[in-house]
Amino acid sequence: MPFVTVKLLEGRSDEQKKALVEKVTEAVSETAAAPKENIYVIIEEIAKEHLGHAGIRKSDQ
Image (cartoon, rainbow, N blue to C red; front, side, top):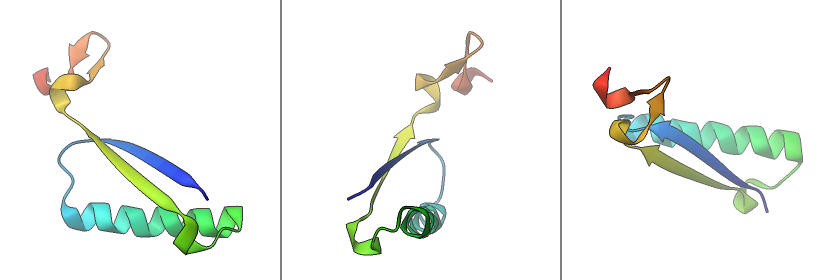
């Protein structure tokens, strides 16, 4: 039973997240020989003020 977690910066549309879940499920099913009904995809959205890179928060760029 594969679990896949995808972490993204907030701001994607519902349609983009729907397509992401569909394509990740397909890829895992093909490569891990797992039935689609056993695959879970978890999307974790990160607020831009909660992510920093090179000392600068994404919300400050």
